[in-house]
Image (cartoon, rainbow, N blue to C red; front, side, top):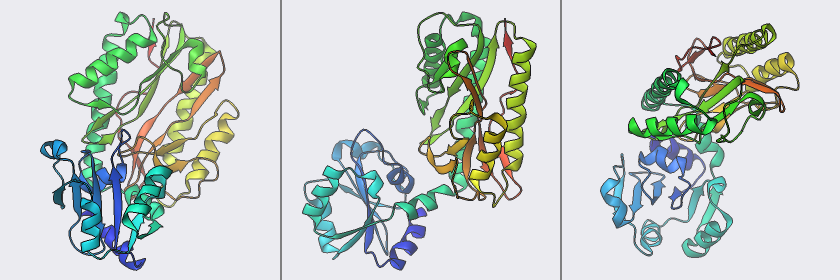
Amino acid sequence: MRHKELQKILMAKNLDGALFLNLDERPNASYIYFTDTDALGILFIPAKGIPDVFIPAMEMSRAKTKDCNMHVLKRDAVKNHLKKKKVTTLGIEFSAVDHMTFTQLKKSLKVTFKDITKEVTTQRNIKDKTEISRIKAACKATDKLFNIVLQHFKDFKSEADIAAFMEYHIRKMGLVKSFDPVIASGKNAGAPHHIPTTKPLQKGFLVMDFGVKYKHYCSDMTRTIYVGSPSIKDIELYKKLYDIQIRCIALSTPGTKAKDIDDYARQELGEPFNHSLGHGLGIDVHEHIPLSPGADIRLEPGMVFTIEPGYYLSNKLGIRIEDDMLMTEKGAVSLNKSPKDLIIMR
């Protein structure tokens, strides 16, 4: 019952409850976290008692919420409910509500709002057994997908072919993608967020960054293979990045500051490493565990995050190796099982 942890915080902050809105195209991860559904709706968690979720009639049939009283979302339903409960102060994630919606809420509900973004984020950073199980299942599906891609690699003529193949097989698994696949070959690999093109695959390093969602939870894995015949310098460069990623994993122990691991990778790779070492992972593919310069957050057991050092030379080449990591009492454990030795496709 995840809401009970939040209720302790609400009581400590003298709040009558918390409100979470999931009403537009961008799902509210905290709403999903507490209800276990992505059906449109509004969630009210009181400081004491069972939460109430208000869902449109058309969404009710697919909404299977946990630990909540379900109500049909009608005009003024939430307003009247809060009035009946004599709610005067509400916690809300300011970061998850746009200005227009927040203005309408203040005008309609006439309560005092307090930002609880930090408190909710901190709670969501530590995954429970169900969350970890789902992320593991997503990672397992991602490993399976990578293996299928390698088996059919000779059928691909372009980056777009690989991306479309991935998306087809994700749907075939009964899953959805956690983001648009990044497929970058040759000089295109020098851009970390390259969009796949229909042009012929280029020789050289080929970066494939992709992931799936399993029961709302994401995976996010990157593997780099080589198309053609690599030079000794190419092989050495890949081995260097591989060794640094392994070292970063070894440095990821309970209590370690995230920025210290990022600092190590940055010192070893220099300017060609031009993004953060990693990020939190869960319902959102990017959650608030930044492995980046200045990030003072300490890694704790139960956290799930990525480790993805990269090496990029613009318009020349790019390499990235990314694993999804679970922090345990003994250290970080990779949830991905796909091989990381350089695979060569001639």
